[in-house]
Image 1: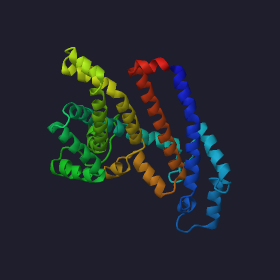
Image 2: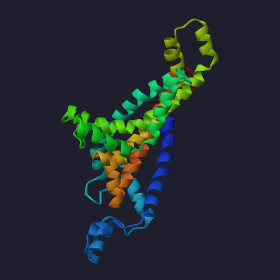
Image 3: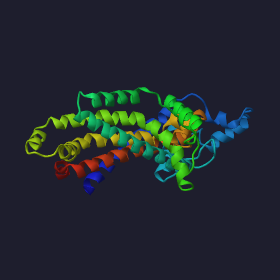
Length: 315
């Protein structure tokens, strides 16, 4: 297993290198000049020249790229043009917020999607299956921004159960922190739960039609044991892959949801950085997101091996 993990990490190096090239080069094609945005309305030529020299915008693009890449390899992601703070420091401030939101959303999605998928597969073409599919289609179809606004109106404005917006660190006030995150996490979880439900149902139906499940029934095993111990465990592998990818998407930041609930996470920081042409921040966010996706895929592969003895024997 350690050798396999080492090989996967080695493969990740050229992947991240290619991503860094695309991120840096494509961002240069965006319209607008960050130096003009920094200089203010007067835009004194002397100030513009000084800023371009300070932030190395006068250098050739290839030199800029290798300077940025070299700094990133040493833990220096650059300086934010908007706040003049190190990008790594900004990411360190926003990442815990996004991780908390992603974890809560994933918990909601797993608690809703997987049981619904199991029930839909077990009771195929019956009322429970139809209801689960209706909710899954609703979760995929309803826009997050609309659902978020409706929840704010109902739960916060009319019922007064939860805060409408804002954020409190879980290390400062755990109870209020969880309260402020419940609604945005639920909003994010609806589409994820729908995908998990459809994926779980499909995987379960595939396993339920297998010969060894019919053999287990012939042996007189209880339906509960057949479903949980035999069917679900063998259907779990594709579900793990989907869950890892979905969690990686959450780590990238939920832009609309964070904007609606004014949560200072990755999504809000990304929007602010794009609008202000804060190149260093955008590049840092994208690279951290790419690293997160790679790590989540690695975790999924390790879980594969842990759950499947046949796959573990080939590693």
